[in-house]
Length: 330
Image (cartoon, rainbow, N blue to C red):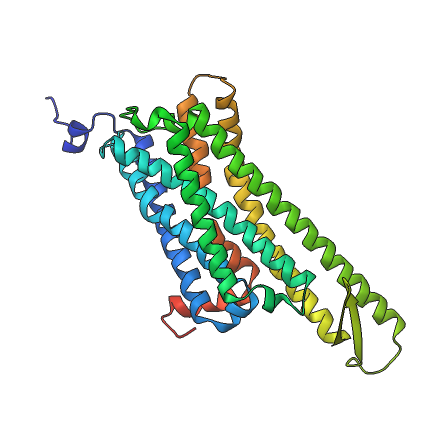
C-alpha cells in the first residue's frame, strides 16, 4: 500500500535531513545571539562597575551590531535552510547580504575603536577622560555608521549585480569580484589597524610594568603605600606602588579580554575572506557555493561569541548576567 508523504515534503520536495540540522543549528545560534547580546547591553547600561571597567559605549555598539545579525540575518537563513529555497524574493535576498556586510564592517570599525580607547587609557592615564569624553565616543560611533553607509553606497556603485537574479539566494552576490575585493579590503585594513593598536597597547603596558617593577626593587620600606611619582611618556603623576600595580593588572585584564574578542572575530571571518580572495582571482571549483555558505555561517557564528567571552573573562559580567537571568537588580 502506497503511503502519502507529509505535507511539508510535498510543498518543499528539497527538504532533507541536512536542511533540518541546519535549521536547528541556526535557530539555536540565533537565540544565543539575541539573548546573549541583549544581556550584554542591559548589563553594561545598568551596572556602573561594568561601565567604569569597560569601554561601555563601544561594547554596546558591538552588541547592537551582533543583534542586527541575530534578529534579521539568522531568521531568514533559518527559513531558507528549512525549506531549501529562498521564498522572500530577490530584493530581500540582496538586503540580507548587505546587512551581513554592514554587520561585519561595523564590527571591524567598533573593534578598532575599542583598541583605540584602551590605548588612550594606557598611554595617557591622566588625560584619558579628557580625551575620550562621552561626546567623543558618541561622535566616533556615529562615524562608524557613517562609514558603513559609505560602504553600502560604494557597493551599489561598483557592482551591477544588484539587479541580477539569484532565486537560490546563495553566496553568488558575495562571490562577484567587485564585492569580494571590496569586502576583503575593508576587513583586512581593519584587522591591520586593530592588531597594530593592540601591539602598541602591549608596549605601553610593558613599559609601565617595567617602571613599577624597578621602583619596587629600589624602594626599601615596610610600608606598601609610599607615594612616588611615576614618569611615563613625558608625564609625571603621583601614585602609590600598590595602587599602580593593581591598576596596571586591571587594565591588562581588560585589554586581554578585548584582544580575545578581536582574535575570535578574526578567526571566524578569516576563512570567508580567504574564500573571497580565491573567488576574486577567478579560481572556481566544485561545491564552491556550498563551501561559501559554510564559511559564511562560521562568520555569522561570531555574533554569539562575545557574551560568552565576557562571562568567561570577567567576574563582573558573570555576576551581572546571573542577576539579570534571575530578574534581580544589577
